Image (cartoon, rainbow, N blue to C red; front, side, top):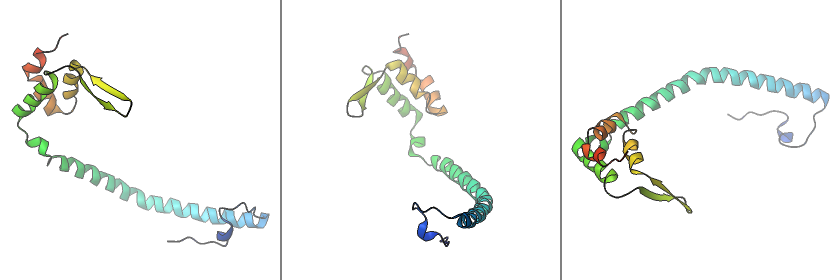
Length: 133
């Protein structure tokens, strides 16, 4: 809905209203501020419900993830290959920098993804046998 006023032609200019015009503009602003408060009161519960639905939908969608169907034994094997074989993991970080993650950090990072990955990582002796403390 378009909001029109008698000052539309001078909005976003350097026009300086007269004292009488200032009172009219203040009244327009006051009426608009009141309407804004009313609309925010109406919209707030709708936005709250929308946020709740989005969060619930995201959580339910996660249940459908293909990663949930990978057998724990295969996940453990992948973890072993990631953490045991080779040295630190290094990769590009932008055009001029690289990052490296040490083996202990790789192992610990796996356990921070989710409970199931932590359980699998903790129950995979091959990963921990290679860790030098």
